[in-house]
Image (cartoon, rainbow, N blue to C red; front, side, top):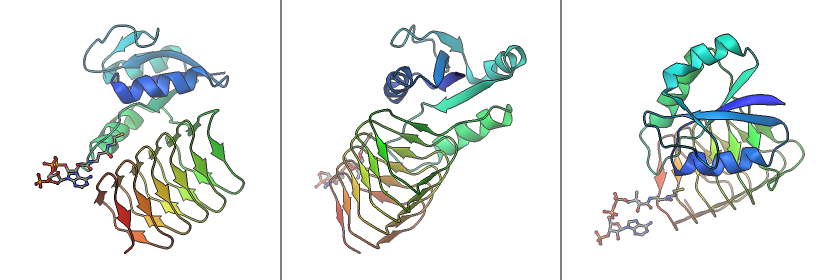
Length: 193
Ligand SMILES: CC(C)(COP(=O)(O)OP(=O)(O)OC[C@H]1O[C@@H](n2cnc3c(N)ncnc32)[C@H](O)[C@@H]1OP(=O)(O)O)[C@@H](O)C(=O)NCCC(=O)NCCS
C-alpha cells in the first residue's frame, strides 16, 4: 500500500478522497489546505502544503494526489503541482476502480481518472490532468498536461487537446479536432472545428 496525502480540501479533494478510499493500493494519511476544514470524509487535516517536507522526513514512501480542481484556465493547478513537486514528493497516476482504461493508454504522473470514465486505446494523457466523472476519451486522443476534461464530456477519436485547457462539462468534441493550449471550451459545447 502506498501512503498518500491529498493536496487541497475543497469539493474536488472530497471526490478524490472517496476514489482513493475504494482503491486498495493507497492508504490515505490526510489532506493539506491553507485552511483547516476539519475531517473530510473522515480524513484528517495535516496543515498547509509546507508540511510535506516534514511528512517526507518521517515517511520516505509517501505520495501525493492532486485534489485541487479547476473551473477556469489560469494555470493555478500547475503552479500548486510544481510547488508540491519541489518538496521531492511524487504524484502517481490514479484511476478510479469504477473507470475503464483500456489497453495501450498512457497516463502521466498525477493524472486522475474519475468514476465512470472510459479512456480508449491509443490515447496519451499528460501529467496532472483531470479526466472527470463520466467523461469519455476515445481512441488515439492526446490530452496535454494539466488539462481538465470536466464531467460528462466526450472527446471522439484522435482529438488533440493542448496543455492547461478546460473542456467544460457535457461538451462534445468531434473526431480529429485540435484544441490549442490554454483554451476554454464552454460547458455544453459541441466543437466541430
Ligand atoms: C464559459 C464560462 C467560463 C463563462 O463564464 P463567465 O465568463 O463567468 O461568463 P458568464 O457566466 O458571465 O456568461 C457570459 C454569457 O455567456 C453565456 N454563457 C455562459 N456559459 C455558457 C455556456 N456554457 N453555454 C452557452 N452560453 C453560456 C451566459 O449566459 C452569458 O450570456 P449573456 O451575456 O447573454 O447573459 C462558463 O459559463 C463555463 O461554461 N464554464 C465551465 C464550467 C464547467 O464545465 N465546470 C465543470 C466543473 S467540474
